[in-house]
Length: 325
Image (cartoon, rainbow, N blue to C red):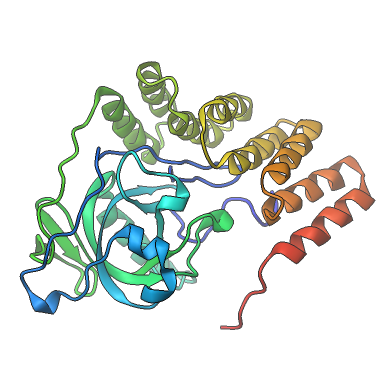
């Protein structure tokens, strides 16, 4: 597994996108309309902005602490804040950094797990988030137009949590009423499956995701989520089949789905199929460094040293230089 495989950043992040070998999930979640921030009764609340504004003009709000209302997904390798259940494409969402690190000691891991447990209370819900907007926080594959970091408070339909004091707090008065999702039968199965997946019941999760798919057979996100469960179960052939169905129904982000299908194919030993998928991703998005990197490594495995060197060099050219800390 190469350096772009399962990322440790954001650790337990999964569906708007689950990454490599372990997948990508573009979560389809739970509110029919995009939430709107109400006027704040308290002048101490600070600025409230919409996701659309942050995405349309990231320079204007970069580095600002603000309130935003969003439908959140808290899952393996996918922590996202989206306008609604119906708008979950990466370009319409922000990456959500639930913990700012560091990640070096057992205490750091315990802190992260504690925050993850808190955030899971708000998973697949529309919530108000007090955080700092960071236009450079792009998430996995650098797919998102920005992100939220330094989260100090999250507020749901009934109560909230203050991360500065690590205490439960009343629902914030800084936003109006949050839209209450009307959960369909397929969403109930997805929620049940997600819980089983987090608890390690992969067979139970796959069964629930399959029930959801039977009700919504053209939902590409559902296939991606089930593929993730299959990857964790090491059923890479089954995951490949689900990625194929996701590609069939996806309207966007097909380049990324081709990459994760390529990784699943690599796990089954199908190097030719993997190279073909990386190539298809490059055709869709010629600036996708991860696709060149993955194809280069696959070519190395096949003994194509010249082709591998060219792809890896191109990947390095397309990868932004990391600024010194």
